[in-house]
Amino acid sequence: MKKYLVAPSILTADFLNLKKELDLLQAAGIKYIHYDVMDYHFVPNLSFGPKVLSDITNNYDFKIDIHLMVTLDKYTLSDYLTPFLQKNVSQITFHYEALVAEQIQEFIKLCKTNDLKCSLAISPDTKVSELTPYLADLDNVLVMTVYPGYGGQTYLPEAGKKIAELQKLKATNNYHYLVEVDGGINDATYKIVQEHGVDMIVAGSYLVGQDLMTLKERVAKLEN
Ligand code: DX5
Ligand code: ZN
Image 1 (cartoon, rainbow, N blue to C red):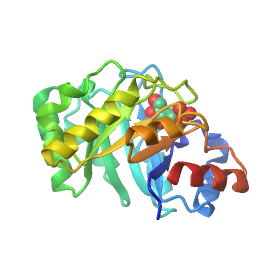
Image 2: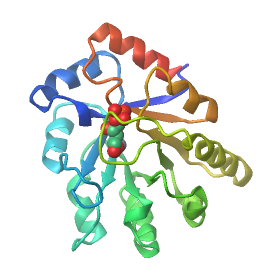
Image 3: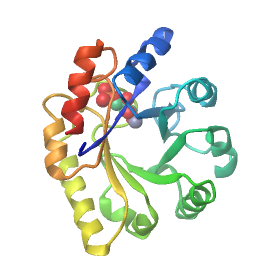
Image 4: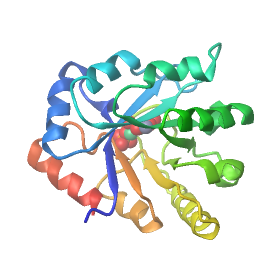
């Protein structure tokens, strides 16, 4: 029985060889793909949007875990999210820092209406306590273990306490969310997040760009 959910981030893939990379992830038995959307406003980087996503969802059965690192700017939440509501998208994460309280409540409602798992992410400088009003309604909390924006960064150890704090709050209050981490997970750091009580592990550079044998071994480490 696998103990942890594993979602490879394709942000660090060679985009000219994305199909090859997705085929490898499929062959390694991967169920979830972590899809990082960046807008050059919330983070100083730009990635991909609904078009690349539909190319993936139309051709693969992966469940999609969307991580929106964006500001809404002139868009309503509903207008922004609609193009991402595609087949197999199972969870959407918005950054807590990118929304005001009213928008967070709207986001929770929109996820419920569309039968999506609702997730909020916190960047390294945000405290778990800021999420208190929303925890009962969340299906997932994404603890960023690096500053959002790039793959291949170094794990920030302060994140461990947040994972443990979230698990404690969950047990005390009977909440139902999972705790996910994202950033800097590799051979040395996966154990740390597992020991702190993580449920779902995102890994980009550690999993993408490997041959099948190595990939399978790495996935098995993160899953068990
Ligand atoms: C960073 C992204 C991550 C990133 C992870 O802002 O949200 O999902 O791709 O990449 P690694 O695992 O290489 O840190
Ligand atoms: Zn991410």
